[in-house]
Length: 87
Image (tube, rainbow, N blue to C red; front, side, top):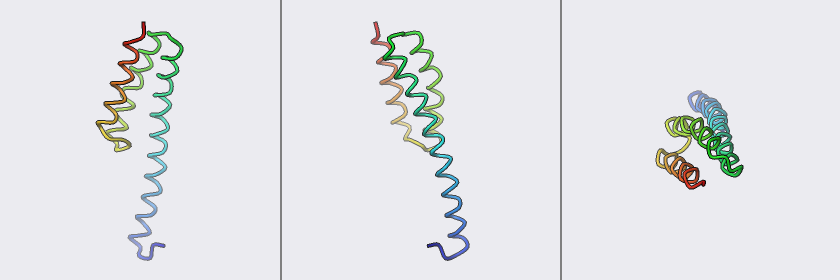
């Protein structure tokens, strides 16, 4: 348990940051799930639109430190490759 006032403040800050990060991660995953569902539905234009909406959200999460920049780029690359391979 935190004893000093600065340690107590740090605990409060971490709790606020954890909540915010959880919200951001959940939002990002929702966008990714929408792209996945559009790919599974087989409609290429809908999937492309979903990816276009998800791209800034994924990169923003990387910028905010939710995930590494390379991880975000890899996710986008793989999603776009899957959309491109749709007939």
